[in-house]
Image 1 (cartoon, protein in one colour):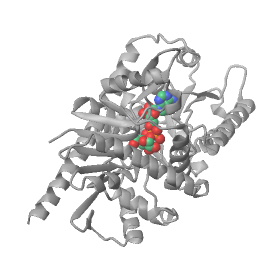
Image 2 (cartoon, helix red, strand yellow):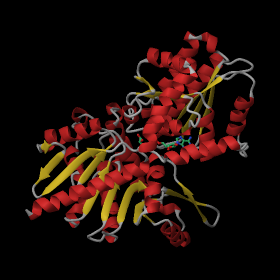
Image 3 (cartoon, helix red, strand yellow):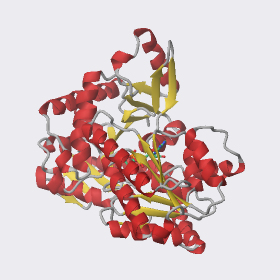
Image 4 (cartoon, helix red, strand yellow):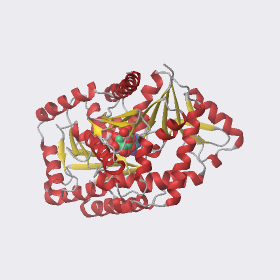
Length: 483
Ligand code: ADQ
């Protein structure tokens, strides 16, 4: 067997150009963090974009970028500003992302963006083909590269290709509104195995294939001439040990960070008041239900005024896709909502919401997870949601309450959390109260079960399961062909 080629829009590293040199840092985000351990362990190369427009990398540093990436077995695909606009901000994030998260009214169907999406998928395909041997395995990731499996298959009919979609696959009634629906499905069907986080997404996909391409499936297999495509669900886990170990280490060491964020958190931890901490952590994205979460918190303070000065919401929002108008509008809305609630309820000694619009170093994130009492995670749609899992993993004393939206893929596995409908304000408000008043024994009982499950199905296991299933699918096809 040859090597594995992983392909995702972004590499797991970020390149920044400093005065006359380059700086390489790990990139944050669910996919990168999740797959890194798989990549490190095996014989694999990772192909993707560095996150920087090609024009902004000075010519004399291009070789250095390549060299640094190669040290981590990564191969950069260069994207121009124009390609980033049409392929990434355009078709990926103004068409597919909103549509697949049921924000149909946000979806734009621009033929120019579609053309750019096709061209850039082709560019990734060429990068793969240049490095591909017949016995290699290819693992394509996510919604930016839906056309890639077919593009590779057309040139290398026998190669093993897996595809994993990290975001929801919508109901066929939503998906069919896409003008380029056939091409997208055919692109994905170039793979031997197509994976989703949940069984629901898998069903939606199979239904779309039937409705749009008129192809039936038997159990979870689609027969296409002399090929079989298997479709299955693989709920992505986290590096459980990394989070729980980091949390234990944190408790043994005073924080060395002196940021505004850490000062505030230390102030909270050292304060003699018995105020409880609710945390909210996500990329600033309209699918995460952040605005409604703040409104619900405001409504909670109104409905249960006895909680004034007794509770605090710490909100971390990582800047994301800041070029897309909807994200700019959301930023404005969140700023205003936070201002309104703080203005309305704050006292001399107390600010109801601490809001940070930035990415946080890992240690701060761990500190926040482990020093909070409640995690409030309310997306209106979310493929999986790793923050929910990370929160549980850091609760080494097994206290803490997770409030989780039923619209997150993670809700299927985390049933001991307080599961809410993110559009039901009353329910969120009641869940906040229940969480704040939940006896320790009950918190422990719930978290014990959650931890047991998350410890067993880690990200490593997820990647292995996917790859084993891919090999099995391929072997079955070879056997059928031989018969
Ligand atoms: P995301 O939408 O990015 O991922 P999520 O799964 O929650 O969402 O992952 C976010 C990651 O970013 C987590 O690992 C978290 O620790 C980190 N993070 C969040 N806020 C941070 C902050 N302020 N500073 C630093 N790090 C921060 C997409 C899909 C999800 C799916 C994943 C993986 O949208 O549904 O779970 O891919 O498949």
